[in-house]
Image 1: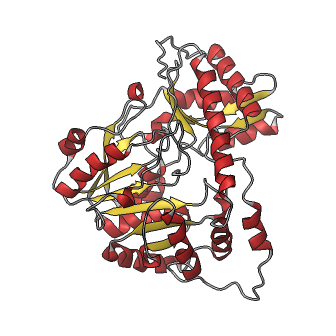
Image 2 (image 1 turned 45 degrees about the horizontal axis):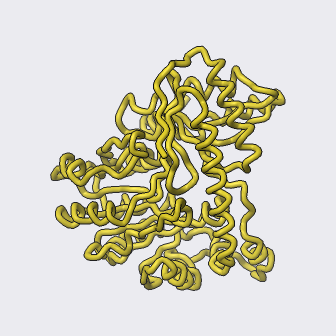
Image 3 (image 1 turned 180 degrees about the vertical axis):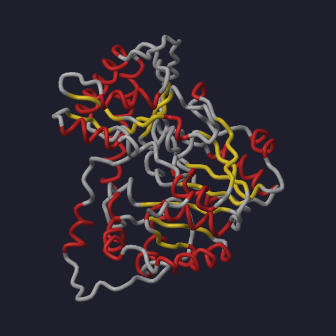
Amino acid sequence: MPQISNRGNKAYDSPIRSLIPYADAAESKGTKVYYLNIGQPDIPTPPNAIEAVRQIDMPVLKYAPALGNTSYREKLTDYYRRFDVELSADNIMVTTGASEAIFLAMMSCLDEGDEVIIPEPFYAIYNGFSNIAKVKIVPITCHIENGYQLPETADFERVITKRTKAIFICNPNNPTGCLYSETALKELAMIVKKYELFLFVDEVYREFCYDNQSFFSSLNLIGLEENVVVMDSISKRFSACGARVGSMVTRNRGVMEAAVRFARYRLSPPGLGQILAEATIDTPSSYIDGVREEYDLRRLTLFDRLSKIEGVTCYPPGGAFYNFIKLPIDDAGKFCKWLLTDFEYKGSTVMISPGEGFYATAGLGKQEVRIAYVLNVNDLHRAMDCLEAGLKAYSGREISRSLHTA
């Protein structure tokens, strides 16, 4: 019998999806599962975008250009202008979701053995793509006590070596929900410029900022026109995860040319997805405003419930739709699995993501979980009822001092 490759055996397993078989098994037994493990919004995709796909009059669905449809890329320049970002269509490549944008950026900017500095916890998929690209993640640990704010510039400088090629951040952050301020980004920019590094920025959640805070795009950092590479996607802002349409944005011509060479290997980004994506740009602003208000309500609901559970350490996130919290348990991986295999509350249970997979530093995150508040408020309350009851029933519960910051 032939054996799979060593890299196949060592492929990074997503902490977000690894528990799905247990959730499927729970549902097969009749247990209602509340899914808070993944950033899959329950909000309807804009009707005008769905209608654009329905109205397609296309006898042949052809390959799109490797860069993506020109009409969509040109229209995206209008979208970015809403955030005071001036671009040309040549600065934008359409990708198969933000995931491919991450991969293309790594492959275009980093060589085997190069180092990329990433504040942790970070979006788990970065681990997987860095492994494929054979680059080394150098983590800087952030802390729940200050809501996982961006580390000080001295922390970045302390780990820069001759192999350091890039710094990678997500703003607003997945998994923590932390929104980085314009001041913090400008301080980081000085380090990037000083050492002539690339600055990768995942800006997928830019629309979702709360408490009257404003989003500042890294594409507006003066003097970093050749350094910044932004990853983007329609998945979250327009609740269109299945369209698989994202973008890589950079003014660095060399990076874009290299990315195009890699992109030609996959021939083209999704054709039907681009039609839907182009239509989303015409979605009335009231849609995004309504979505933001709904997530804000869910955010406050979640924080209120978590704050009242004994031993839970939490904070009010400033953006995105995630909260990365500490639980009074021995092992988050075991607890999250136990919730699906051995526990139910009034015929229901909850699925959340164990925190360990969001770190590069071994041993961190064992008491932490990511919660995606992507369910309506009523379901969110029921999910929190399950979590609270589960914590009381779990044999690996620990009593620890809770911290709630306003």
